[in-house]
Length: 113
Length: 115
Image 1 (spheres, rainbow over the protein chains, first blue to last red):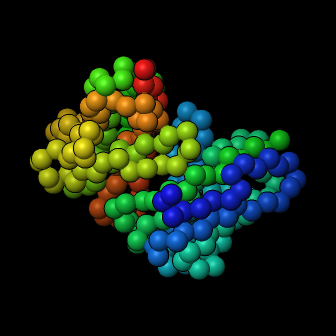
Image 2 (image 1 turned 180 degrees about the vertical axis):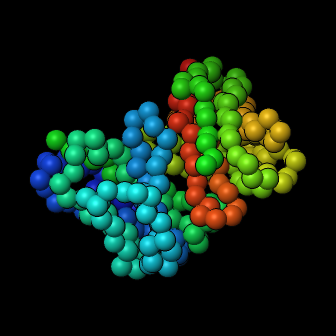
């Protein structure tokens, strides 16, 4: 248990659905991250939040919409996704942005049909 | 932009033996951090070991050690006395100490431990 909890663990959705991924950290960290892990590709950083403010958007399509209501919670809202968006979505946190040690959740395995 | 390359998609080792996972990276910076992360079937990425580029001494954490060759831009991970619980995907990662300080990951190496 690293203190970063992601729900749901698995998600299957159609291309017209709207769903949200949730991440919660109990570590008192101030920075939170969304990563995308696709098969046979390196992890890709999607978004970074530092003290609830978005500081990084790595050219992510607008069908992915992040939300960070406070330093402990991070959401990823999904709508009109494509099959190629199927991947493992990992949330991570660190004491501050650029912190040396990232703590990861167990991810949400997303399948888009 | 920095890149990280892991040239071994899969590796296997006999239990109790030693295995070395390779990682090379490309950067023009002189100071940075390097990491090895482990991702077991539970999918949770766990930090295994960290190396600061300005330190010449290789980092060690119990059975895990690195061979950091700064001039060659090489950062290999050695696992001694391999255990069944070491089976996982291993990712090498690079982080700048300046700018956005983003972690850049390699493609990963799947390690299998044979009993």
